[in-house]
Amino acid sequence: MRIAVFLALLCVLPAWAYGQGAATPARPNVIVILTDDHASHAISAYGSRLMPTPNIDRIAREGVRFENSFVTNSLCGPSRATLLTGKYAHKHGYRDQRPGRSFDPSQLTFPILLQRAGYETAVFGKWHLRSEPRGFDKWLIIEGVARYFSPRFRDSAGVRVIEGYATDTIFEKAIEFIRNRNQSRPFFLLITPNAPHRNWTVDAAHQSLLEGVEIPEPPTFLDDLSTRTTAARQCRMSIEHDLTKNDLKGDPPPGLSGAALKKWKYQRFIKDYLRCVAAVDVQVGRLLEQLRTSGLEHNTLLIYSSDNGFFLGDHGWFDKRFMYEQSLRVPLLARLPGVIPAGLVCQAMVLNIDTAPTILSFCGIPVPAEMQGQSWKPLVEKAGGTDILPSVRGSIYYHYYEQEPEHNVAPHRGVRTETHKLIHFYTHDEWELYDLTKDPDELRNVYDHPAYAVTRNRLKAELQRLRKHYGDDRED
Image (cartoon, rainbow, N blue to C red; front, side, top):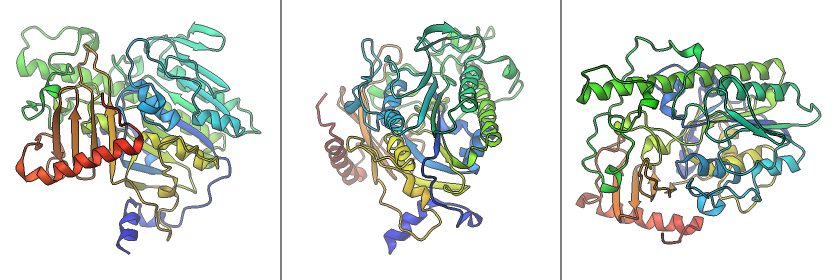
């Protein structure tokens, strides 16, 4: 009985929303919006104080917001490959983005399975896998460096420059696809803007947004990293030291130094980042309106997420890669009116390996055994009903591989539970342990603290269990 109550509480929704669930449409349309480096703490639906995101928030208000959604490897390319395959990086092979690495396009992906099942499929935006898309009837992807203005795009006909702001172009192509779709078939649409990735170039419509506003610094902005390992302290992601003139769009005022210079750099960086987010939010609003006017909103599963999290001055950093919360955690919002109850908040821990099996299960397509994720469809579909929800993870496994000179983040693997996190920087053989209940900001590494000896040993055993479970037992 206790287990049933606990599982039922994992997804909570307002009393008025109970009973709204209905049978999933046999073949719903599916749209996935996958932004680039969009931290969940830059979305007002997640309680962000930085800037409102009303259109993205609408997805949460009309559907479900996952409070504990994480990635398995916080890096753009590997994360995208994981989304497509439902597998960890050591299984799909695209572990890092070093020269010569690419995603093997012969692998089975959920778009391929949707296409085989009769779905019309398309992708527009950043691909970042160094291979040609498979499983898509239509595709238009950014070629090379993802510039914000007039980037080069590639499709089956070749490469061409499309003038304009990339965020607008990508969503416009997606909306054109919806308007011109084959109405006799369901569709799958993957929209992948390059925003708000570095270097945060702003369009004309948002240049003055937040002008004269001082953005609050995160509570860990002045973290001195004193209890972290040398592997963590050696990284090059500092707001104070590692943002470039290209990032900041100019030189600081004369005479600024020390804390004042760091604050100035943060304001320059965070405002441009948020302005890029605002441009995405506007386009999400356009997409939602297109679904409404096309009569598609009630039979279209819409998912909003990001390829990884991002440090927004947290611990004095920008970028991602680490297993710390702001990098590990990603937004995950989903809407399917009549099936997913409006206003649902799900506390269960989910991973980006779960996206592929979830979409397949919503579409009534068998999930291949090789996919390592598990569908979260039962969590949202049964919420508010009397059925017992399926068991959920008690822990998640993470593995980051790439140590390159620009950011210098050491490879590491780790395990996170609801209450603790253990990280092993294995090339340095250094460990960190955080008590997420007492120290949610991860400021105090308690790995060597005697009071945590039992917890430390338990988490080490869990880390080894997860490595074996997911087949990541090779010693690096």
